[in-house]
Length: 366
Ligand code: TYF
Ligand code: FE
Image (tube, rainbow, N blue to C red):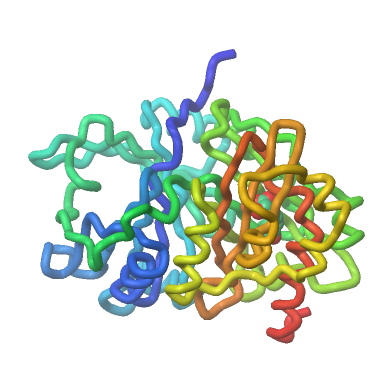
C-alpha cells in the first residue's frame, strides 16, 4: 500500500507559555534538557522569544510573548501554558500539504521556504483539534541548529551525564464529548494513520475511567496520537476538567521514552517534579504480580518510585505520570520505558484513573 502522507517522526513539540525564560530553566533543571537555540528581541524577534531544548531526538520549543496583543500572548491568556503545535518531520512537505488539504484538512500556512547560510527548510501547517496545529517540516537540507532566525545557544546548566529521556513516544489530545471518532477519522483520512489495538471503550469507560480513548499511528508507528473524549459517568470526567480549564480541546499529555525510568524518576523527584501517587495496594496485589512476571527491576524498586507496570503479548512497559506542570490542571507528562510492549498501559488504566481522580477531588473538580 502506498503511503499517502509519509512521516519520518515528530519534529518538535511547541509550547506557548507565559514566561519562556523561566520555562526554559524548568525544562533544563527538572527535565535535564539542553538549550540549543534562542530567538528574541536581541536577535531581531521583536514580539516573541523562543527557547529550543532537546533531549535525544525529543525537541521542545518554548514560545513566550514579549508584548501584549501577539498571537502567543492571546493563546496564553486564553488557555494558559499549553501545546500549540505537534510539528511533524515530513520528507515532502508540498505533497503532504496538498494531500491533507485535498482530504479536507484546514490549511493554516501554505508551503514556504526559509533560507539562511545553513541551507533551507520547507514548512507548512494544518489545523487539528481546538487551536492546535501540525506544522509540517522538512529540514533535510538544513545544517543549522533549528530554523533560520534562531541563534545557537549554550545550555543553561550542564545537562545530566545521562539524559532523562531520548524521544517523544506519543502525544495525546483531549476533544469534546462525542467528537473522538471524528478526529480518529481525520487522522485516517488526512494522514493515512491507522487505529492501534489499544482503546478504552464504553465498557471500561462506564466502569471507572470516565473517558473514551482510541489511538491512531502512522505506518511505522513512530508517531502515535491517542485521542480522548469524556465519558458520561457518575463522576465529572478528567477530560471535562481539562476542557473546562484549558478552554477547549488541546494536548493533554506528552509521553517521553526513557531507557532508565528508575533513575529518571529519582533524579526528577530530586529536582522537585511531582508525580502521581500509586497506592501500596497496587504493588501488593497478587494478581498484578502474577500478570507482570519478571521485569528488569525488583518490584520493591518500582514501588519506591511509584512506577506502574503492564504486560501484553509483545512484552512489558514501565510508566509513570507527572501531575500537571502548570497552574491550570491541563497538560502533564508521562515517562515510559518499553520492553517489547507497543501498548499504552491498559492494565494500569484503573490504578491511573483512580490516582487522577484523587487529584481532581483535591482540586474540588470531581
Ligand atoms: O496515552 C495513554 O493512552 C495512556 C493512558 O487521560 C492514559 O497514557 C489515557 C488517558 C488519560 C491518561 C492516561
Ligand atoms: Fe500516554
